[in-house]
Amino acid sequence: MIQVNARATFNPEGPFKLTTIERRELQPHDVLIEIKYAGICHSDIHTARGEWGPVKYPLVPGHEIAGIVSQVGAEVTKYAVGDRVGVGCMVDSCGECSSCHKGEEQYCLHGNTGTYGSTDRHGHYTQGGYSTHIVVTESFVVRIPDNIPLDAAAPLLCAGITTYSPLHHWEAGPGKKVAVVGLGGLGHMAVKIAHAMGAEVTVLSQSLKKKEDGLQLGADHYYATSDPETFKQLAGSFDLIINTVSAQINIDAYLSLLALDGTLVNVGAPADPLAVNVFSLIGQRRTFAGSMIGGIRETQEMLDFCAEHNIASEIEVIAASQIDEAWERVLASDVRYRFVIDISTMEQA
Ligand SMILES: [Zn+2]
Ligand SMILES: [Zn+2]
Image 1 (cartoon, rainbow, N blue to C red):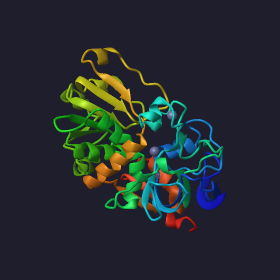
Image 2: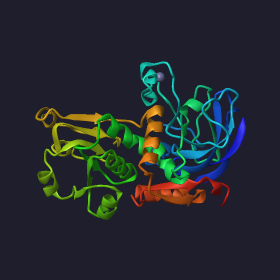
Image 3: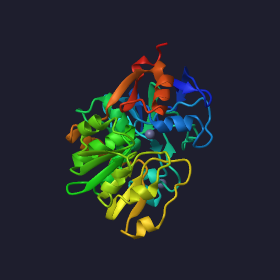
Image 4: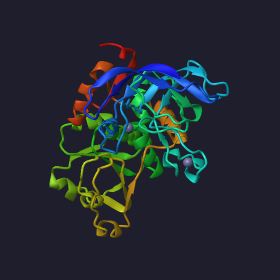
């Protein structure tokens, strides 16, 4: 086993402490990555606090990983030492089911292996990117194009692909009206990507506090959902709505904003069921859908798309010693728009 430094939480309440974890010895198709930056995703917090089911401690979260290949297994063909690479929310899947055959490994019928908090096919409990190194099979590693800085690239591996995938699947583009609900880590990427795809983009946020930001990120319009007039004014107007909010919202009110054949896609995952009045769907042949991250091929396509359009995440880089504080700020929605840990600070007090 390879011993590496990491920041782990030892119980649901934290705090994070510097510790040593083990990575497996390189198998023939494995790549050893020296992690440079790791993004902080809201789901790190849900998972580490046991809100999405039991986890084992110590737990090292982090599934927005950007780094450099530092060693390759004997049969690796895709990557070489020195390559700029990324790892997202999953590190393996069965490779044999119909979803895997379609390149939609996130929907593996046998369950994909999460980057942290999962048991992998080698029988090891996976640990994530708040760490100096990770070992991943080459087919779950993606290439980060040269013109995207590694720190701003890290959040693309979750926030980027989570929003790119539904925008691509439901064909956001010229002539399409797309609304993004919530302007946080996911929402700000949805705005940038939908704008780059050529769609007319509207942000639907609780207040107008971030209006200037939203327009700067590429939104054409910005409305406050706390104002009931918004729902009257925008009724029946969107082809696609991406809901990034994981809190309870009035789904019927948002469905009423869709045009004929419009789709409301949830990428946020509220813990409790949402109520839907079927009349909101059948009147205009509307769809209420969900989407989860994206496959490996699509993740590479998203990175290449971002490189081509010169987009990446808006980030605030922090030291490893500031993770606890950053988590509190994520919970208070006090981040524009993603915290990224500078892994070179791992050993600092
Ligand atoms: Zn995430
Ligand atoms: Zn599978």
